[in-house]
Length: 78
Picture (cartoon, rainbow, N blue to C red):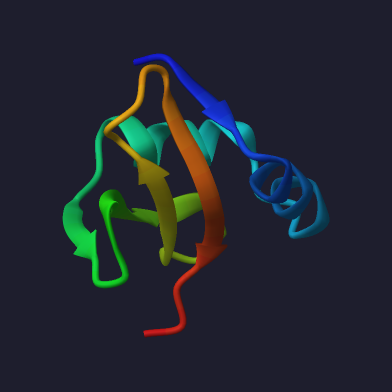
C-alpha cells in the first residue's frame, strides 16, 4: 500500500517516537477500522503493538486519495 504523511503526521511520528514500522503495520493490517465521525474520507485504523506494552496505535488516514494520506498517529487512550 502506498501512502504519504501530512506534515502533522510526520512531526508527531518523530515527536512521539512512534516507529514507522508500527504505523505501517497498523495502516496495512489493522485489527479494527472505524470511520472518522467528522470526515467521511478518513478511516481510523487500530492495532495493538506488542513491542510497546500492547498499547493500541491509532492511525487516521484519508483513504479516498491515492496514495492514502496519513493525517494523524497516536497511541489511543481508550
